[in-house]
Amino acid sequence: MTIERVASTPEAEGRAIAALTLAFIRDPVMRYLFPEPQSYLSHFPTFARAFGAAAFGSGTAWTSGDQGGTALWLPAGVHPDGDAIAAFVFSAVDEKKHGVVASVLEQMGAYHPTDPHWYLPIIGVDAAHQGKGLGSQLLKVALDRCDAEGLDSYLESSNPANISLYQRHGFEVVGEILQGDCPPITPMFRSVR
Image (tube, rainbow, N blue to C red; front, side):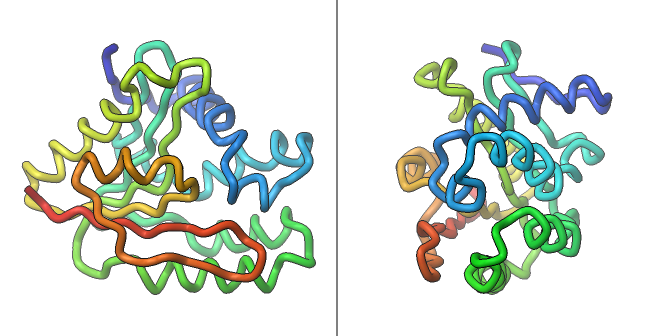
């Protein structure tokens, strides 16, 4: 399967976000935030764009040729729009969860490296395309570039089932974000090779 950059067009970006929406449909944290099917389908695309939209403009959004998987990487110096993320989450998530979500976002910020690095805010493979190595290929394309640039990389895993995949690519668990009834989030760091 070929891995290619997502073209910076509304259609190509829409296909990438659709693949991520299908990929995260069983994600523990996403379904904690948006437990009702309609709520999830309505809100996840906006959430994904808030976290990873800068990847489209940076040319660091990749997808598989069959559109089954997408990774939105942010190169050093490019960051998610924290204000947009917080504003969106607090407008879309049940008010009863606001305290938990605020603490989770604060803990995520505390784990985030301060030295220049590449950040993977979101990667996913549609269930219909899993088991083909797409996740590994989507990781490899950016990790090769990280290594060539001499930069570390960082991500937060919202699904414990994915931790072993990231470990196979050199990421190490650096902590665990736990708050209230929210499923755990695992910060992971990979040193340059």
